[in-house]
Image: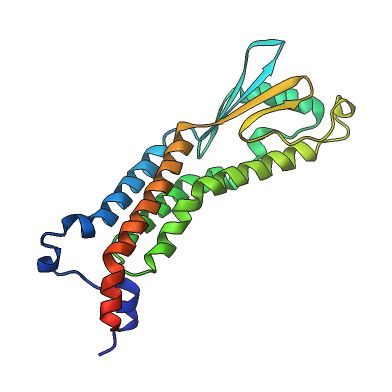
Length: 218
């Protein structure tokens, strides 16, 4: 009898006697997905990105930190400088992302939980969004920085003193007389570590369940 659509989606179940003596083979995918979920949840409470603005008139520099749902640091001071060159307030950037970022990450964690119960190739579809999240975060950050830096107000007091610019989201850049130094926060690092862990989980998932799927078809 051919397996139903639900059975093909969920994949073969493993009986307890089949698990005997092969705990690592069948337990590894879920274990690594668990680690990934923990890393993502911890990252929610930690900074995802830092930028230091270095200039002679600021001996201690200016510091900006981006969390999943808010900005912290010398935001007002940096906005004050940006106002003179015609750049919009940083608080206007990524408002949608900051409003729903926490919920998005929690949804990704739930998807990883479901992925642990699926023993077919369809588990990959539940894992990929969480795996790509660090790259999507950086891409979104770059797009906002590019938009703000290249759409300056021509009527600003110092608009003629600076050309449109795109500060690098990682590494060192120069904006007029200022130097920017951007680096990943511990939250983004943990999120990237979770992505690597997910890749390992998929490797063990394929090794554990692909032979069972082929056997069921055969």
